[in-house]
Image 1: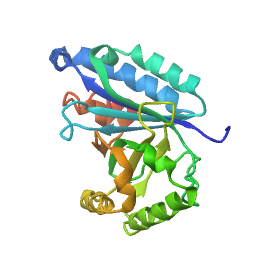
Image 2 (image 1 turned 90 degrees about the vertical axis):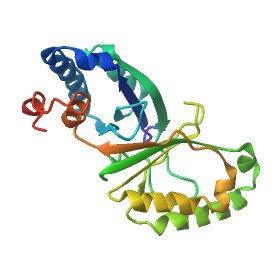
Image 3 (image 1 turned 180 degrees about the horizontal axis):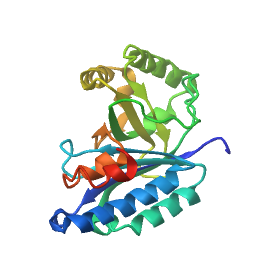
Image 4 (image 1 turned 120 degrees about the vertical axis):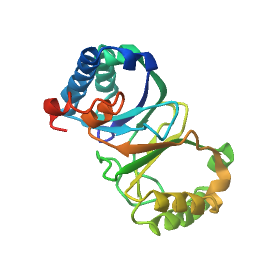
Length: 232
């Protein structure tokens, strides 16, 4: 449907050998990466997050949103041409579409960026037994699940749908300024009836919101070169 949009989560890991390159070369690589992202962000939603200190297999997350797959494809083609990507791998990648939930009246089909200082992301798969339940039964179960989430208004949900598009069924993402509140929410959700039908909800990524220049500078500890370029 035309109102739905694609959302792509791209997690990057940089080869440690890159940090041993000359500082000027590393700065050029980051400039090329930044330029590709800024070009895409002129007409699309793009956000960046650092995972330095929170994960061992990824250091940078780029979340982008577009009206069609071709646009996302073209952006990543340009991104791959940057010097930084020649030294990077993509250990995790999730693709999905925005779509309003059948269990809630909240509208989730429009572009909506993350606003919290921290973002938590994980792929999610439910059992086939869940989908075999009558619609009315799934509705009843999910109302309790949703009610638990509403007890934590400081945590915002950004779930997208991946059926047939990627290995998971959903990409679940939350943003908040309070990590402890998020932890309490997830612990409480474990006791809901809906959680019995969870097959997979890992790996789980703890991400720190950062401007792209800041997130890039965190990769090698150089804090000056890009700030003059983008005012970060």
